[in-house]
Length: 331
Image 1 (cartoon, rainbow, N blue to C red):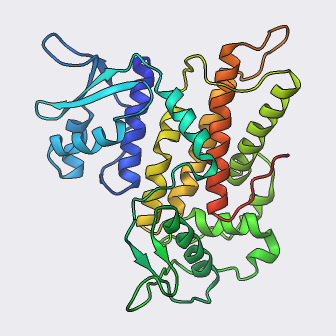
Image 2: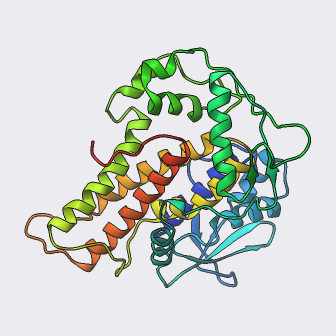
Image 3: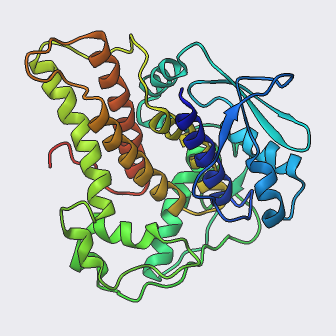
């Protein structure tokens, strides 16, 4: 992991903390990391917690602990310590944490990220008629089940819960856009924000500016890579270290994102996660081709890159399924 990789990983942790409302502060455009000075600990140090303490109205050490929880365990990072008034100190991992991550995704498939974070929680939701409330409620129910919660009419005693997002202005959204695009339009915005139904026809356009297209196309591209690899006579298998810190960090974050989306009843957290995974996949694909090019022969590097690409596809497919959106194998 290079200093630039580490900087991006820490910046991603800041964004995640802000998205989860654990930290209320503006996200900086960049995070500076530098070699640990004599007498310090770890390989690199960062003072971003001190920078954010004022805007967040929290002690710098508390900010540092919030970020430490979200950086610890990221691929390439062996350990994180908080020292002094709130410095983050990083020890890089000599082992390849991505290998374990790819194996974990492969073992769980589209249920990667499902767990027991809300085991013992019971929830039942009142019936709703308004279009967006109905779509958000059924999606929240699915998210809760992924985290071990009991959901249904008999799951909880007492008064039924309500999910009350800002109503959708377009009642004909499904007829006009179809199920996939309509659901994305209703779920991508936070429940307290107005869904972007005006101009939502853009969600039907197959181009880079359409976030739904990017997410679904990223998945279909991972499937095409697997098919093309088989035609070339090889399959994926993580055998060699892959340099993909951003994609690796996003895949490692996925269980936490699912848990937060369920706990806060906010499916938009998952939609944003899928957008980020799709973009990181394309960046990785463009910088390190998973398939041989020209006269190249399939190598351990290609098998490892393909394994990571397939893991990204698995996360995208699982996330789209939870949103009730199809994941096409061909585009």
